[in-house]
Length: 252
Length: 356
Image (cartoon, rainbow over all chains, first blue to last red; front, side):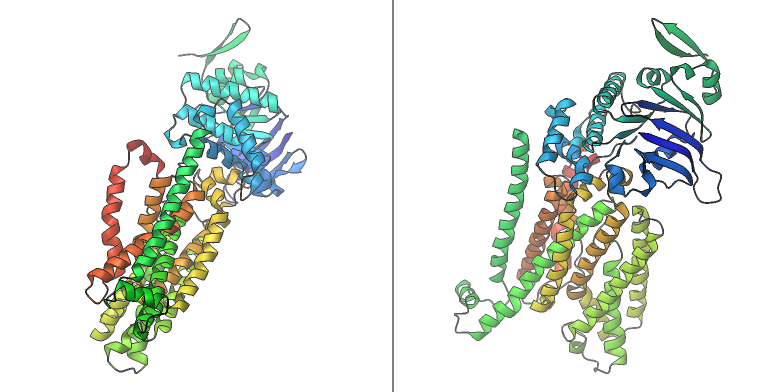
């Protein structure tokens, strides 16, 4: 269980903090969505959780272990990351996914590592690609490989930084549904940033609205009100109920 | 599974082929030289059954140490190049990126021009300047200055957490400082000192002895062992710093140790043999072109392709020089550059993106 309490962060010591008073709690199998304008601090918050930045204050605990006190390797056993701009070397899909195991095996992959990778590839229907060079795959396929690599870390928390940024609508759906299925099946908590409010609504359980480096609103789907969206994004929207679904429409 | 086996089989086959080529060329090179010994005589000398003591001396004291030096230095420069390119995420990085070669040249020139010709009264005679006359003093100076250069840059770059661009740029700056220093030294040198210094700068495998070979081999073995063990960590680094860190890799530490080891290998080779350029750029690229970027394969393959290129270049330089060998550094570049350009232009567009 992820427990972030009163987290703050700033570049340098005397600067205005980029993040202030961040509180997030996420249980296994739950999907939390970060929403906010560009520059509201979503990526910075991820960097803090991932250990790429050192927080200025507050606590971050996972299953009661202080995240800031863990080594990179220990942290990699708990948290995995699917970055916004995915980079791969010219390796096969199989080896790229196997690479996610590096924090477990250290220097040399063992039989159980290979077995797990095969299982993940099968589960995500990537078997057919297994021995293709990743750098020859399309954006959507590479995104799937990145998710598979993150899963190979056997994390308890998965961080998704705008996973649908470079994907077409079919691949967006595919990745998000896949992520949700795996979160429920393997009891992995997911923390994800998304731009599309409708996508967020259908994918997430908990919502955290970031504004100026602080979580201004958080809660379930009831948080999607005209007032909150106007406050966070500065736009007017219409919220429509249609066959038990909520649809958010931009107002021109 | 099929393709996987075929792929791994192909990669292993390339490595085995390279190994065989290096072994074959190693023996072939023993039979080529300026003394015009016959094949049979070489063979007898190799088995120490020849009646001619000179033949045995040529094979065992001149050719074998030289060919060993080609194998070791070629391997060292090539593997250093590969590791530099990976850890600095820069295809143009080379073993000399940290200014190692320039610093070594400065140190050697200082030793030859300032000490041998100035402070020590050795007489104004070319023989006294030749690197062979006092190889260790010159090599030691070269080594001291290249180590200094490495430590200075790595020390500086610690402040910026070894950001690759910072390392590359400070390497270029540092290299230029040493080159400027060398120019000043040469400006004040006597004509004899200057020619001795310039001759030192040409890489020459003829300077190698069993002892220098052993020292180079020791450093290479240390580096290559570390690099091989870290293969997966280098693979992770190909995904970028942030991703590698979240996979549990201590990127800064890996980069520090890798840069230090790669530079030390280069420093030792350059200090003993002079500047041998381009091996460290060409060989890793050819290897990546053939085998992709999986370091489990590219590390051994780079080692072997480096040995192979330097062996070929040295054989050429000895057969074409007409008695005195041509500078091997120039030959590696002349041999390698057209090949290199051909490879770059034969690259498919889609593959281009993957060879960052």
